[in-house]
Length: 304
Image 1 (tube, rainbow, N blue to C red):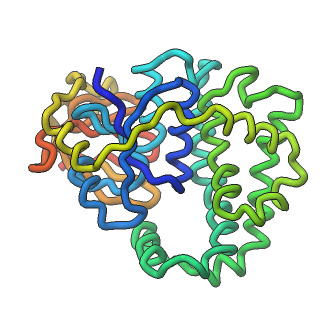
Image 2 (image 1 turned 90 degrees about the vertical axis):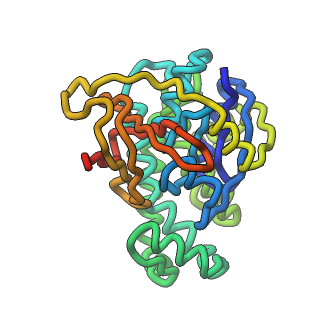
């Protein structure tokens, strides 16, 4: 089996979800550190234009978005499971965490540290979101963002109120990874403010410590150029299959793009599609032919 290559950067909260999944599963993985902002010359050839972090690579198969990364990890390394309760609600918790909880987290964080952020970062995030990156606006909204952050945090606190060690019970799972992301980021990005935010949630503090103790498995660094060469020398494991809904057939030309931000379209031909995943074949000189996997939820797929 090809080794896991994980394209990330250390401060990425979305990457932290997957790093902890590696810890739960005690996996060895190769760490390719990508730039925080564009350009990303050693990522875009692999993904076809998708610029978000993290991305997981296994040979010539490329997985974009934590939703599909965690699903692929579970399929390839089922034990110990990150789905101790076989329930698709873990993915719904991911959507809540990534969008409804993450946005007040962004406002809370950058209201505190926005003045220290380089202009290049602000310009990059404004372009990625199709909006503005206004530190002044985030400072003005900070009291309201803190209210929202506190309300979302309380959802987790209430879940843990009965004394369970993890959200699904005695074992850690994907629901914990998704929810943990925002707490991890707050503690990492604004450690001087995090104690104030968490003071009323002692069970969350203990839960965060339990998840942090799971570790990140066994990472080893890899140069980005080596990862591209591995993709070029490999062949995808993906098998052709039609979408059960009848909408897409193998060989259909499509573009795939996120529906929230970072909407750069990725073009290719369908390998397979299902209710939760679409895989498209594409190529570039740096990587040869690869298959890029996306979730269906949160992504738009259009025939071309």
